Picture 1 (cartoon, rainbow, N blue to C red):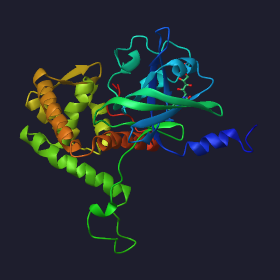
Picture 2 (cartoon, rainbow, N blue to C red):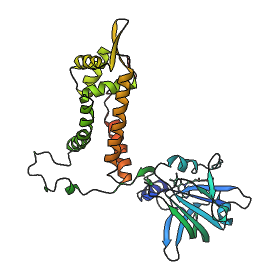
Picture 3 (cartoon, rainbow, N blue to C red):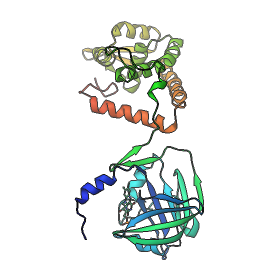
Picture 4 (cartoon, rainbow, N blue to C red):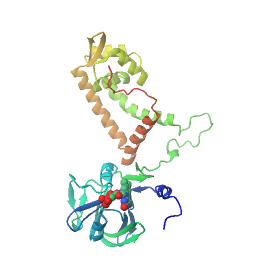
Length: 326
Ligand SMILES: Cc1cc2nc3c(=O)[nH]c(=O)nc-3n(C[C@H](O)[C@H](O)[C@H](O)COP(=O)(O)O)c2cc1C
């Protein structure tokens, strides 16, 4: 009997429920490993420990799961999206080239997951176009890593919510014309300030200001830019002025050198300049690691994802600072 509503709309409604992503594996009677991506996983009972998931009756792996005494639910880590997609495609050799271990009932165990629940089949039951599998957990292992999330048909990350009042403790803003702490401009500026307050002393220790360092960084990605182009990029990307003077100062230190090419004056990093830029780069990476280390691991992943998404979606065609230019 068909449903009294649009099936697509029903799927969308179910997609409002956010889940993790799992891959369930087992060994077929003929020894072939089987596995499917499933987000229908749920916990059932703590004592005895039981879990469930459901598989479409159309799945090629159905018979193998129905005949298997054991199966393993792998809860995927945030960086296992490709693995999820691999096991969501029907009919291919999903295990080709994949390093696995062997679990209960010879079920294949996938590596680097957030959690693996090895189960003995308790029972399975047909329900509409799916079969529900219920298993008793006989062994499990877990890692403290960010998990992959599925919501509204898309992969995601789950981060905890922050109480906005933690930011200042000053309560609501006093007037409508004062910039509130939920103003994006304020948040970006303040976050940048926290980063810069750590970075500036590193740069100063090398006798550099931010703009001089950005010149070195630009040249690290591609040197031999023309002085005109460098001046234009520094102004359009960072609002920086006085580039010619800075290049002259860097040249005086022996960190960059100018060469005349055709009609243009081009700027190149010297070996010493490259070594200094690399040293600073390493120091900046350790500042980043320290600052992000104060966040929850999923938050530190999510903050970069969100900033990337913001940059992509609000870009009005600004040239990329590292892109190849002459
Ligand atoms: C995020 C995600 C969750 C899925 N969850 C389920 C599920 O719970 N049950 C299911 O039958 N199929 C689910 N699928 C689709 C199956 O993974 C896919 O149909 C399966 O790999 C078919 O493999 P097979 O025909 O080789 O057995 C899901 C796919 C994705 C991408």
